[in-house]
Length: 379
Image: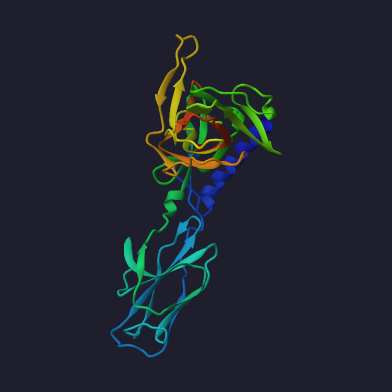
């Protein structure tokens, strides 16, 4: 532990030297360093050089076309590079009279957008200015006077500025190294975090009707149970009697998180997998999310249930009701209108959805698991 602590101190000292000597790292506060800003290196840029050549007859001397090239990167788009002018361009572009725009590749770019204007002012916002969008080629033949709708959406490198600072925590006498992103200083987080809820971590309850014995694969239990539908494929399965029924599926949605306000896991969406056999469902009740808050140590007994997640958007809008083969599942996405940050040890988040069948027939409902999507704010 002592060696690890010394290593951290040594690395922070090196960062202090780097802040003074290395381009792209800025020391925002006086020495000793308390806040360190790390701008994005190599932000998206467009081609620096392009050529425009004419095939066919020249047009009037007054006709000039200005071309612009946007380089598309995984992180975002560059500014429109240019203008690259075509002087005495044909008044009418065609398959025999056209301008060819060529450029050199830009390291890291995935595709390119070619735009054109009638003035040397760069296009901005929404415009009808696109010659071609998302091409992987390094040249394009402009053979038409018409252009397509386009929105200039330039990536702002300042949005990826990372600021490291020493901030107070919720613990007396202890501070922590905190990462913030962007000029506004939003807490840095990983928006692509996810974890899987396995079928055995959820329960089924018959809110109408009754369960009957499950298959031999689950020991014949009278009630929902884990069933082996194929090698390496297990589902939570409940079978009802031959009567109208409603089955509530209930899952806790609680990834690993932190207990400091503003940190931890921020739930944004849930992907739920279900299947049905024997009789098709009549309807599926929209899902609900609720927090359950328990009292502090030594306080009076309690459990406060409150709606959470804001307006939930379910996709597809009309959920699938037809029967499926055993172990084969539909996929339902539940997007939260108000993401939920889990940062209390006294609170858990619960998902419930009810599957309904109104005919006098048996229903076999299978839950195949779920994926929870969240933003992780670790520091």
